[in-house]
Image (cartoon, rainbow, N blue to C red; front, side, top):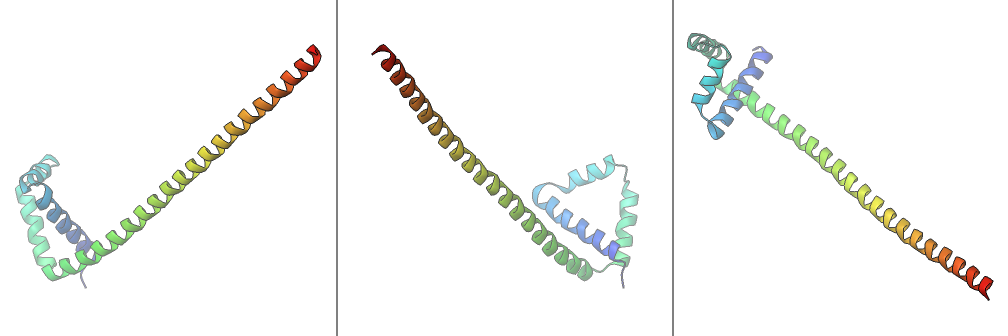
Length: 126
C-alpha cells in the first residue's frame, strides 16, 4: 500500500499541472519554482522519486477521487453562499416594504394631525 499522503500530493500536483497547461505555461511554472529556490537537479530528483514510488494509474485514480470530492464540496459551499445571499435579498425586500409602509403610515398620521390642528384652529376662529 502506497503512502496516501504521497499519492494525494502527486495527484494534486498532477491536477495543478493540468490547469497550468490550460491557462498558463510550463515556463512560468519553472520560473516560479526557481524563484522559491528549487534547482533543476532537485526537480529531477523529485520526479525520479515520484516515478519510482507511484504509478500513473494510482495518480489518476486518486486525482479523480479528489476531483469529485472537491467539486461536490465547492458546489455545496456555493449553494450555501447563494442561499445566504438570497436570504439577505429577501430580508432587504422585507425591510424596504416595512419602510415604505412606515412612511405611508407616517404621512397619513401627519395628515390626520394637520386636519385635527386645522379643525381646532378653525373652531377657535369661529
